[in-house]
Amino acid sequence: MQTQERLTSAEVSSLWTGYLNNTMSTCLTSYFLEKVEDKQVKEVVKYANDLSIKYTKETIAIFKKENFPIPKGFTTEDVNLKAKRLFTDKFIINFLKSMAKMGLSTYSLAYSLTTKSELRPILKEWIQTTIILDEKAYQVMNNKGLLERPPILPYPNEAHFVNSKMFKKGILEKKRALISQEITQLFVNTDTNLLGKNLMMAFAQVAKSHSVRKMMRKGKNIAEKHALTFTQKLQEEDLPSPSSLDLGVTDSQEAPFSDKLMLFLTAFLNAAGIGNYGLAMASSVRQDLALMYVRLTTETALFADDCADLLIKNGWMEEPPEAPDRKGLMDTKE
Image 1 (tube, rainbow, N blue to C red):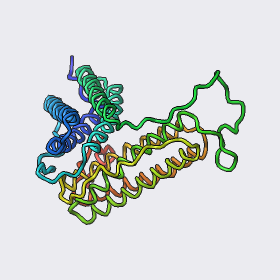
Image 2 (cartoon, one colour):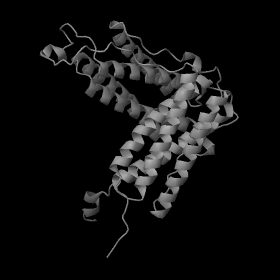
Image 3 (spheres, one colour):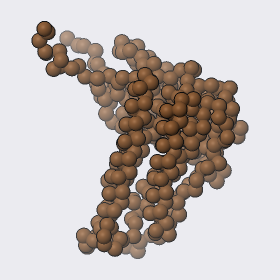
Image 4 (tube, rainbow, N blue to C red):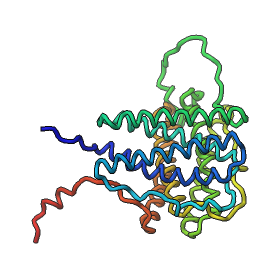
């Protein structure tokens, strides 16, 4: 007797989270589309907006087929298209490139964990179209000289093997030079935190709630401090670091997004940041770098917890699907 193949917990998780993220992305890109001036950047924004709308519609269709309740997510109530311009075109294209990178990571993981045969082609297409978004953003940034390229290292003359445990040291002993993996992670995390710093600064300018503004200022300070920490590590090796995007935010104080959306996006970026630090920690053989990432991850996690508390306090956090409380169900009713 054949039964319909139900969604697994991994599939529910990726679709449910993706729905929230894509409805949020629709709000963001709809606003960007209203304000962007550069024609090349506008084409990328339009493509990103079309994708988020498409992904949302396809997710709704899957939920309806599965008789799964559709999350509320974000709607037109969470965006004010008439609000003054808050971000420059330079910031917008950098932001879209960063979001494409996170989308590729998210959809690739979702695809690898998906066992339902009907879902795999959909997720595969999402990966392919997100690659196109990344390529479009890359081409515009490259054409306009906006790409931040990681440092270039001299090629080794031959292959070498590590012959001493000193290769791992770096706390009290003399530190060896940074290796390519460590340089890459320091550079990428500097760039990500500079973008986050400017986003938090913009949100702190326009948030209506005092508690949300305060949270955004805290996030801005953390991102700024982390970027400086990574920059100093690169400068110790006379290596270049990404430049700041301080000119990416205008002086507008008119909110284009709801406090709920801005706080949700902050929490989302925090989660992505923790994942980035975990990867960086695993890629860093030198002990001082690994310990640095442990410390910064803890600070980011505590800030993420503060954001979650504020979302809950305001009734803005949708509850993810959860397993049945078997213990509670088995308890004898009085």
